[in-house]
Amino acid sequence: MTTPVDTHRSVQEYQIGHTAAKRIALARTPTELQFLPRLSEEVGANIWIKRDDTTDTVACGNKLRKLEFSVAQALSEGATLLLTNGGVQSNHCRATALVAANLGLQAHLVLRGATSESAPDGNLLLNELLGANTTFIDTETWRRIDEFTAELVADYARTGVTAFAIPTGASDEIGLWGYIRGFEELHNDLLSVGITPDAIIHATGSGGTQAGLILGAALMGISTRIVGINVSDTEEYFTHKITDDLLRWKARYQANHPNPVDIDSLRIEILDGHVGPGYGHADSEVFDTIRKVARLEGIVLDPVYTGKAFDGMLAELASGRLKGANHLVFVHTGGIYGLFPQREQLFPR
Ligand SMILES: Cc1ncc(COP(=O)(O)O)c(C=O)c1O
Image: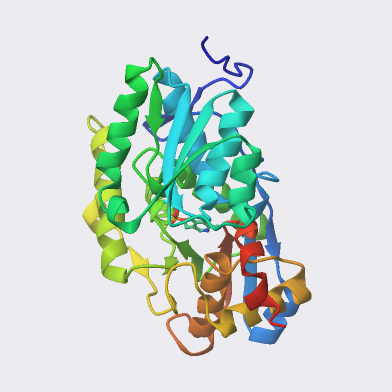
């Protein structure tokens, strides 16, 4: 039996200038750009927040913007199964599981790390609830994740199932369209509130959000400082990863373009130094910031991505590479379910 696909949400074209890609509308956009008055007063700069944590209730966050393009591609290739991967508490995998269930597709998630004996928590609980098939792999298998994925796709093909592989975080030349469109939206927000920010800041975890924002600005001819605060790896790693994704995007979408983007001229700014104890782990200052922002402004951040990046932004504003800024825009990329498995660090007893 073939799986019925929800056809009332059809694949359409999103176009910017002479460049276009397939998109299926999944996210509730535009999201709001909000001013944080009490925090701004406390830190002595105007802090704005782009509420991409509200792109949906369960599939919320930046991944949904990217999935609009990855899933459109999957559907146009006739896929009935979305195959993707990430860390055990991956927000991207949970968003993929939700979108698959929404559209009548299957989801298979390959998660790095061991599952615990106890009942699933956070994103893992949602994955199970949404009926995603999950495979847990060790770090050795993770090192050859592309090969492992290709083997799974081939296994599915042998059973007559067309699986579409979405890379980690949907950060490739297709997924980065999510934040080309996201930049266009944010630019309109900025025009309507009448500010020119000193920087647009966000967490960088697999590079797609940053690559998309950078390209969005370039395609619109706008010069804005776009700053990624890396929550894993290093500045060098992300500079290479983002450059590769940008080059692949150009090769795929601007091959015969009259005036293609000059990738070498784009600035990739990563503020390294805030990874702390490592990916998925945060030090006590990050938890302090999460508590402070929640109580002052009613904005909930998470320790893996947005809390770490927000805390990094405040530190850089106080005495670092953002010192002297007047207006800063933080893109809230979601991740709320990653907070629950870290309840003990948030409220030590
Ligand atoms: C909540 C959240 N914020 C930020 C990021 C980082 O975005 P990107 O992977 O596009 O760098 C991710 C995923 O990696 C995420 O889940």
